[in-house]
Length: 123
Ligand SMILES: [Zn+2]
Image (cartoon, rainbow, N blue to C red):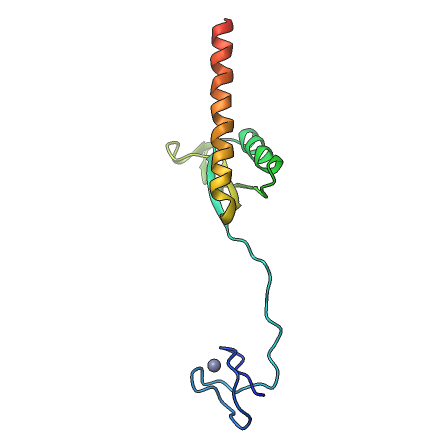
């Protein structure tokens, strides 16, 4: 049976061209590409590498394939051109883990705040 290589429709014997795609039909379809590509989305901007590595570590510990990516910021004379939008990089997580990642990170950041409060009361 001839197939259209573009829309993968099957045609009866004798048809030579796909009327929809206007491409020549082939006898066999090429193997379907089923690479499990996961879209990575930005979870959080990180101010510096240390906190980025820390946040990534927490997510990885929770089974999330987080990726830390350094942002490319143009520097002029050693000073970032826009301090207001300055960040070291971004933390990327798979799109389907975004919600879970945010919860984990929120809880982590909250626990950090609590730790700081504890220190203050000790002093
Ligand atoms: Zn077609």
